[in-house]
Amino acid sequence: MCPRPFNVVLLFICAVFACDGAIRGSQTQQTNPPTIGSLTANPTAISAGQSSVLSWSVSGASSINIDNGVGSVASSGTTSVTPAASVIFMLTATNTGGTVTASVAIGVTGSAADATISIDTSQDRKAISPFVYGYNAGSSGNAPPGATWLRLGGNRWTAYNWTNNYSNAGSDYGPYHNDNLMGSPTDGPGHAAVPSIADATAHGLGLLVTIPIQGWASKVMTGNVLLTDPIGNWFVPNQARKGSPFTLTPDPNSSPVWQDEFANCLAFHWGNGATPIHISLDNEPDLWSSTHAEIQRNPLLYTDLLSLSIAGADAIKQAVPSALIFGPVSYGWAGYINLQNAPDASQYGDFLNYYLDQMSAAGSSRGRRLLDVLDLHFYSESYGCGTRVNDSNALPSVRNSDCVVAARVQATRSLWDSSYREPSWITRCCTNGQGIQLIPRMFGKIAAHYAGTKLAITEYNHGGGDHISGAVAEADSLGAMGREGVFAASYWPLLANDSWTFAAFRAFRNYDAQGSNYPSTAVRASSGDIAHVASYAGLESTSGRVVVVLVHRPGAITDASGNITGSDGLRTRTALMQLTDPQTLRTVRAWQLTGGNSPIWTTLNLSVTGNALTVTLPPLSVTTIELTP
Image 1 (cartoon, rainbow, N blue to C red):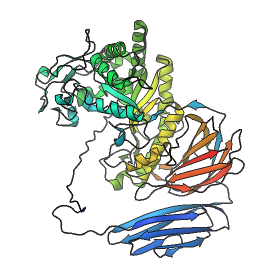
Image 2 (image 1 turned 90 degrees about the vertical axis):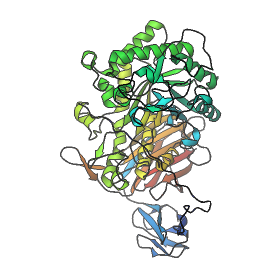
Image 3 (image 1 turned 135 degrees about the horizontal axis):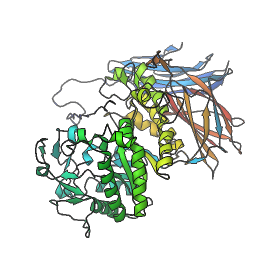
């Protein structure tokens, strides 16, 4: 039996602070750690035998040191260095309040590059969907800067009642506890979605809203639902088609509530935007009987879910013909293959094949497409030294250890790379010894069972949101999903601190902090060392602008059974990048994200000659390079 996914409960504990920044009631004065104003190298790329000048400024430190032979230094100054090979200089500043660090890399050319990157702007051109840079949040203010798509989804939506805003998060909270955390009747119908619609339309973002189809919606505001209670005590029927005129002001005591009327409400608030509103058919139905046992009291059958999906999609499409329908919103691999061991799995075989076949047939019989986007969730099942890469319950020292980091930054290759076989139960049970190659695999199913359907990954997470390795994994994921043709994707946060994940979005969105974004056309970018350096390239054909994102990571060491036991070490690598382009690219700008106490993008000084350049890649780093004619 395939293992179940872990559940994550985030507890946010708020402390009350005095206006002077001290904790109320505390008389202890704290010393702030030092502040590093700057650490730069000029130039950052030199030939063997040449020198570079390090410059720095620090305030509030009792001691300051720069490694690699520089030693103790004053609070500000410069020094000339002549490294024999590519190197990272680390500045460490300390006082009684703590220690902070900053680093700068200097690349030394003159020997063979560690990795070669080949870019050909005439090959493998493919449009990148604007919706791959997405996040699970209700507003742009809670998403990474530059996010293009928001998703309203999760377990709380399955029993959401749009007429009164009551909901039930199932086993995630309570358990089985009805509440008004998504709003109350006084907030107005559809309050869980209406403010998000206003935010998305105001900022020009795409939006996915979940419409529940399971069949029951919360009736009362509060109380723990006992599994022996009659369902009708706590919930009202949630049905697909109203069959009479819609209203935007339904009675909060309505019974039943209607899915197509909710869709009409969403469309009314969405208006005639540049893109249609996106609607998903509930959330993770393969887990209803465990997560939502308060309403799904029997195991869910293939045929049950298909009946609910067809009825809901048909009614929603009739109410809002322009809406894009997403489904089945499966939680993970065991859901893909057998709907989490559904009782009729042996009768119907592979679940996603069955689902696509049946939705295709139902759409044909009704004369309209009932499924526009195959919607899946994908939480990596890769492990390093016994810890899952996205285990948010593990201590930071464990989940961000060398071994887990190596597993994390390699696990992103399971999105596309047929040559990468991650150490997980998925590859051991279900891929015939091959790599997961999730995106190509799913496009193969689509081609065979419902041609023309788009693909979305509306929840994913590789861990490390509080660590540079999380930024590396996220940048790699964004690049791969854009290049491979995913229609929409949204990251699901598992930690309260996702600052490094947020920083990774800048590799593609507003990379220069002046509004420049990665182009919307992917072109060929191949790496001679894919285990350590991943490469993505985009072309803006009107201006000839080429943007390249390089992701640098350690490789993984495995034992005889394929288990990851460590990394092959954190080191700096030099990458030689050659571009094949009809124009001579004369101007280069570059930015880089490396490790440290907090995520900071720094500007690099690079030069391009003959459409080629060399760039130094620090350990665990993301680099965005823009080249223009």
